[in-house]
Image (cartoon, rainbow, N blue to C red):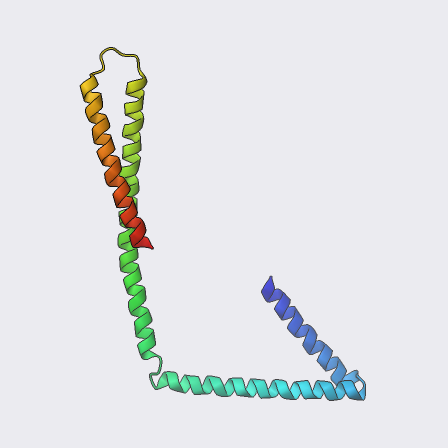
Length: 146
């Protein structure tokens, strides 16, 4: 949308300048001529800049910078991939933990007399240990991601 607006504005200005250059008053013609001259100067300066920078590129000015960027991107891919694998693993273990919690909650809510209280207490203790481990690993992953 912005590209369309800028393009339209550019062509509108060119059309207005062209109209003033050919059909405008003497003052408008002079103003249009001045603007076209400045535009030509800007285009020429831009072309000179591009030639200069291209020559610097050919001479190797940007080789080190490009190598540094390439190394950085390689490191990000490597560490980013490892981090994504860690996050996926952590999320899978968290989902397993939540499923165990739901099953334990269902077991506690049932009115069955055949529930072994000792097994339930052990399961709760194990679940709590697992929660603490997941919590600390989650914090470590979060810090690593930042």
